[in-house]
Image (tube, one colour):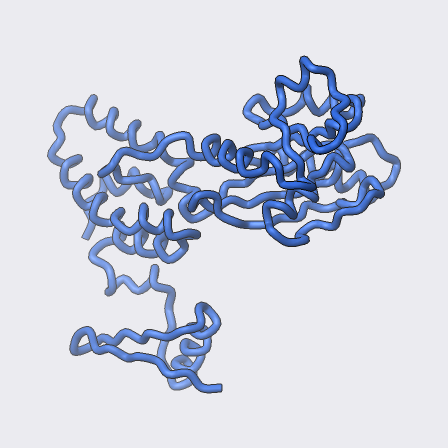
Length: 294
């Protein structure tokens, strides 16, 4: 099958090639060009394209934007940084410089997630409904659901966007004491995933009284974790005082899931950077304010 492309001359010594098909079509065109002797290099290394290392870094990150919303935040960063560098060099007051550095640095985590998804881990004891919730969020059977406890033994991930913000959900093995060596490995991976998470969702089965595993998980969850009571469509057997501390959902019917996702979004992105602020989108951003760009 053949596909037409559009070739535009943008200057006497440069061309642009436009095609359909996403990365597969682009890779095929690059392979064809390489076959006739064209040297293919990453855009970040094509220094002649950019006015400065700052410009190159900004353009490279823009290409890696996970969603349209994050791309819109990245698209103006080269211009914002050019203005910031000039203002910073004209600022003679060291205290104001330090204050500005702190203001920019406060957004490092947010800036990192413009190209890397936030990592949200679902955890709980076996059969609490983690895999069912993952499937509701995904809109298809991403995780295996079975009445037999311990079905999930590895970390199963799914990437999506919530209100334009990239999020990776991780469905994990149920937390319990077990003699099964494979399940033990799954539990260990669950603990590792929790330690590396941006946000943890602790899932509890409201249709059964709290178990010792539930009580242990309740105590050990990070303070920032969301405590979610699942199976609200069944007879609830949790004590009333505990019910006030969880948000109720039903992964089977979908009840409460939209509210959970909205709460999740607000927890991951509680605020947006002020307009006009350059974001610390590259590990070298501090050097941009110290070393003249070419």
